[in-house]
Length: 607
Picture 1 (cartoon, rainbow, N blue to C red):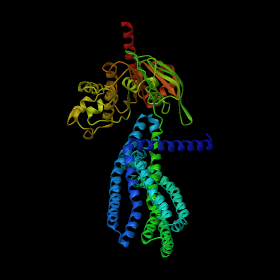
Picture 2 (picture 1 turned 120 degrees about the vertical axis):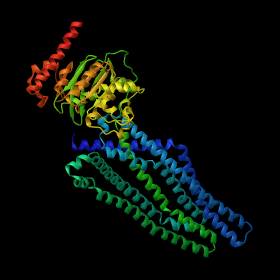
Picture 3 (picture 1 turned 180 degrees about the vertical axis):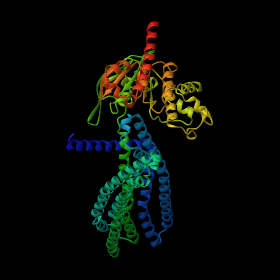
Picture 4 (picture 1 turned 90 degrees about the horizontal axis):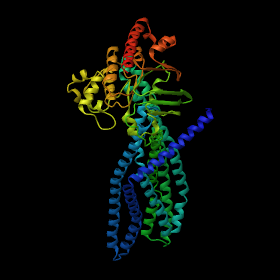
């Protein structure tokens, strides 16, 4: 991709994110449509009361100066208008909090749901710290837009109404005010432009700083052990001066606008007062009308309310674009198909190709894995093993080709059917749940019972150490310090507990010692629901025990067959296992292979 094409693609993505952000804000406003309308109604009512106040006050003053009988009545009306303005402002403030909270919650739910529905490699586009900032601080700022927009709309009523009232009171005072209106418009335009640019830069630096902080917290032990605390502190805080600069620039823009408006407003008021005084001396207007004209000039020049509302909308829209970056993540779509009852778990890959960036990582792979087969996927680092495992169980979709399970394309399955019959175990599992037992039971569909949890834990070699915990399976995860191997066993137990017709083990025994790994493999063959197993393997013993080995090299299938066949036929296959491929390991593997072959012979004889 040329730099120009990359620039165009970046601009297209930015436009897509901006459009998505605006749609999300509209949806958030609709979600609280009643409350947003109430905010708008209250703010418009308060603005109308503020607009009526100078006229009522001016007329009341004229009546009182003349000693008219209606003076006390109009005095009471003044009090009612002022009380109404105060009450409506208070109601608007109360409702604004509700709308902000509901809108923020909706944006967070939408962002989190899309994040969890996206393929893992798409979700990993953003660092954890950045994702947290998008779903917290930026979602909060964006959630203020619906109510802020209502306030901004209402803030326009007093200036527009005040200009109209000035014309109704006296043409010359209105014209004196209009002389300064172009300056007000230019001031607002510059404020909106400069504020948007400054806020966008501030939020970007904020995201990057949050990402670095999260990385440092996750690697706290490594940092302490390496003695690089000061270096990491400097790295995390490296952009803090820039953050401060952008923050000060935002306030400078706001302060500069306020200062200029503060200088402009008195000039407008003095101009209106001067012309009004001349008109009063000429007998064209009364004292009350002069007072109303001055008050209306103040309302018409009330740029503070408009500026504040505009600033809130600008900040919120900019923050919404940060949050909307999550909403544009490609989601895995699901169909309505179900798997056939009693299917053996036959997995078929037809011309599967996967592209990451500009590179093809898996090249047109076609395989048929018979149901009930244990397949070891081997290869050097970077050969595409983990991506193969992800495609096989549809953690990601291929860019070309299809993957079928018992004849049904994985894309066409419902999400429930897919996750009910396709399970995973990983090399670094994340335990979710309140207790150890809950972490094992965690998964789609109805939760397994305590006995099923214990059976799965025994198969994974976890039952013994779990029973030693203070409350056994009821021990809170936070109170159960575990080694990497123990965490991996619980991850295996979770996969075993939900084993369907296809189970994918992505290097899921890497932290186990050899003896335990072999016990887990035997338990998987004998104690867990029969089905197809795909095992990303680095150990010779794992490959030797598998029914079929799929040997990947540079994203292509170099060969398939039994471990014994590949070991004897191609010396390059031995180098895949590195240091394990010495003579002792070869002898051990030979014995494992012979035992495996012996079991195969026995099964054939039995048939």
